[in-house]
Image (cartoon, rainbow, N blue to C red):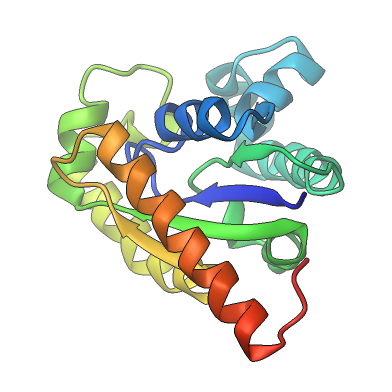
Length: 181
């Protein structure tokens, strides 16, 4: 059984949808940000404060490299996990990648009260999210096997779409003779 890896911006629903997918597929759920917090004993905002974004990204790379070596898990990644080419390569080879795509408006709505988002502790969170999306959206799409919109959709509906699309993808791969991971 290969891994199912969720990528996308903050507020796309990766953790919520990941937990539901894991339950539906009867697989363990892993979250790269939670893994980093467990390894360091510190919160993501504290890591950013002490080590800066560069220090956090180094820790994120180590966690993603290890998590992608697991077999048969649902993995939710942090929004910036795709920034490093090594991470993109690990994610791509680590399983089937689902990009949970969402609008900046939806991100603002979902993250407005969350103080655990260091990059959003700015005067203009919308501008930050727009800048992040401009850089990251092409990277998410580069590694995604499936792109699913999450705007104003109940998580269960998103999960059902992902499962249907994965089944169709696997059917197409087996029909075309493409090796399944």
